[in-house]
Each structure stands twice: as structure tokens, then as C-alpha cells.
Length: 214
Image 1 (cartoon, rainbow, N blue to C red):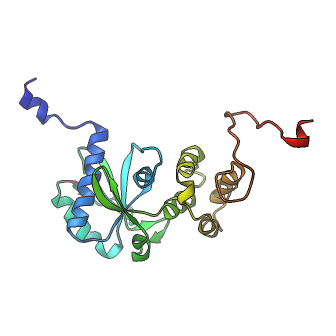
Image 2 (image 1 turned 45 degrees about the horizontal axis):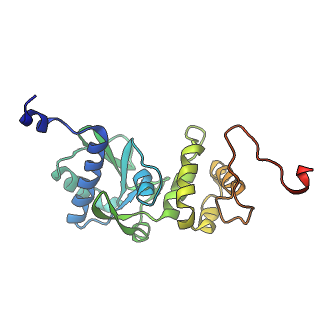
């Protein structure tokens, strides 16, 4: 293949996804649309493992049409799915979701205002607060989406950035989230005042301590 042909090759999936993230953030910034990076890449920007399936942004519903126009002008393919809480944008087949409702609730200006300006992939952008990230991820846990392992990796990484009192208030009425919070308490991840976390191999119980060991 000639050098010119090689340059024309599409990027690999990870590069395409990261480029789509950057293009979306720059487009929304240039259009002066309030937004925040949310979801897995927001967690990653704050120290959690990197996701691989998509990137997520949040805007208010009143800014959806302007956001679609700005992102399309940046070269992404914008589509409106049947769901009435987000739209999708694609860059070389890699997905960027733009949400205007999260966990069934409208994205608000107050939520976006709590975001912090961070550098993500060499682009400055607002990133959702860690407490809001974890609260949303816990409240979407349910019978058909209940991956505690993935979420544990996130809360371990973000534990010092999370307001656990707010989390405890947010998860009332969400039984799967409360079950996860109990597990996080027992593992010593939260501020529950329990003994320091003990590393336990999967499928094995922690060794007894104190009088229990006699």
C-alpha cells in the first residue's frame, strides 16, 4: 500500500472513539452550549479504567437541536433513535451518545454547573462531578443491568471524590443501588466507618480476625 493509501485508512476503533469524543466536546464548546462529559469516559477522566464501547455527553433538552447541528457540522453522523432521552452521533462507526435525560430525569443546568473543567485527551472540557457520575451509575442498576464488578472498579478509583451522604440520599427507593452500596460499605470503600478493606480473592472468604480466629 502506498503512503497516500495508508493515510486514507480509517482509524482503529479506540482512536475513532476518542476522536469522536474530542470533536464533540470542541463542537459544543465552540457553539457555547453548556454540556458535560458523563458516563464511562467521565469516570476515566477522574481516574477509573478506560471504557471501550462509547462516549457520553449531557446537555439540557432546550439545547438538543443546537447540539445536533454543531456536532453534525463537526463531521459526525447524527441520528435520532426511538428513545426520547438522547441522540446519537457516529465517528467512523464509533458511538457518541448525547443525553438530555439521565436515569429518567431531565439534565438540568444545575447538574452541568457542578461539572469540573478537566483536560481529557488534550482537550479542556467540563466533566461531571464524581458524586453525580456514581449516583447515576448506581441508580440505573436493575434486573437486566447489574454489573457490580465494573461499577466496583469505578467507585474504588473515585472513592475520595464522592460525597457518600449524597449517594445515600439518592439511592433511596432503588433496591439494586442500595444492595451495591451495602457491598461497597462492607468492602470498606465508602465512608461507613467500617474496618479497612481486606483484599479477598474471588470466591474466597476473608480470614477471621480477633476472637473469631481462636
